[in-house]
Image 1 (cartoon, helix red, strand yellow):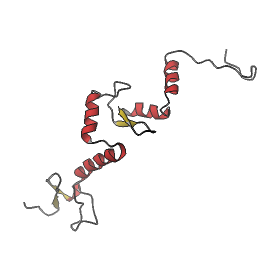
Image 2 (tube, helix red, strand yellow):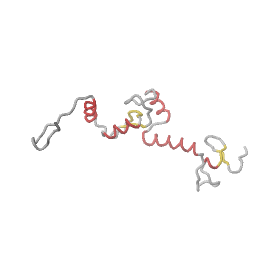
Image 3 (cartoon, one colour):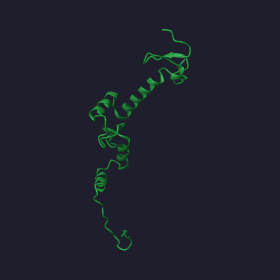
Image 4 (tube, one colour):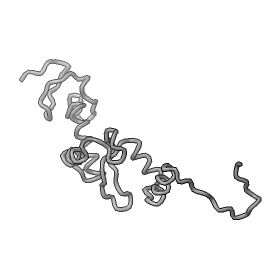
Length: 139
C-alpha cells in the first residue's frame, strides 16, 4: 500500500493519515509517533482505567448499562466519573461530576450525608448553647 508524502499508516487502526494526526516522537525514525493521536487517546484512556481502578472498557460499558446511562444518585445527569471507596479502592459506580464532587466534599462520611439530607428536608438543626448570653440567635 503506497503512503503519500506527509502521511503515515497507523498499525493500530490501519488507516493512512496526514502527519498532523500524529504526535511527534524522537524515538521513531520518520518523526511521528508509532500510533495516530486517536488510537493513542483510546489506549491512554483504557490504560488509565486499568491502572487506577482495574477496569476494562467493557467493564465500564457494563456499569453504565446497569445504571441505565444515568447517575445513580441524582438519576438525571450523564455519569462520567468513576466513584470508588478511598480506603478499600473498591469501585462503587460511575457518577456525574456534581454528585462525585459532593461525595468528595462530604469525605464519603455517611453521617454527614444523612445530616445534610435531614437539613434539606426541612428538619433544622438547633444548636445547644454552651455559654448562654455569649451567642445570640437572631430574633
